[in-house]
Length: 102
Image (tube, rainbow, N blue to C red; front, side):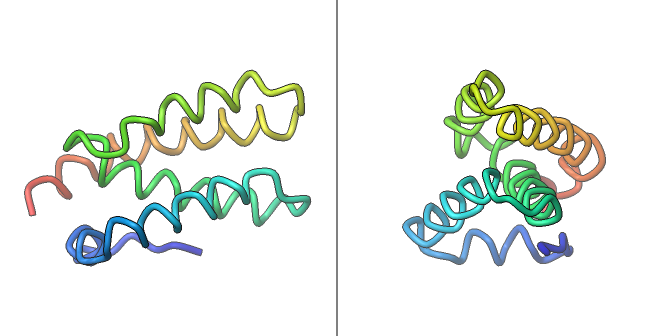
């Protein structure tokens, strides 16, 4: 599972753009996994990444991806999207200001 640490913001942006994109894509794909704990952990990780990136104008397609998933025919995808969005909003409220002041 991803853990948010004080230096996570700096660590994340030290990664190459392509690597960050691959990580986000892999996590997004895990939202369709059969195991509920994998889906939950992927959603938490996506929420943490979005908390780091969204407030500074990065990853603008995140919200569109989640909105698209929220209307998916598969209930599991819809649930995962709504839960991920909820977690993201909580993380932004709790950690967003702190992360962007680093």
